[in-house]
Length: 105
Image (cartoon, rainbow, N blue to C red):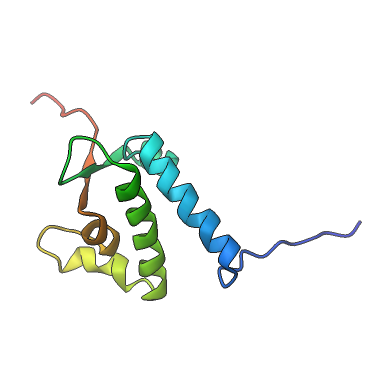
């Protein structure tokens, strides 16, 4: 039995388009909550409006691409940024919040 392997080659424009469309549509349709954020119980919220807009969601997807091009430095910015914002947060003017309910003391 021969196995076929499909590499995730992000050097092809079609793959980049699919990646940005996935992150953009998932953010927009989930109002800032992608499947991964749902599992992690976090949500992306807009700093400029009540709901994540389509263009803002696409900007956030493009920000993930910028983070990858920076060899992950965009993700590490969370450690020295005073507001804990990564590259995609600053690009799309968003923040990530915890959506778990507060435990009563």
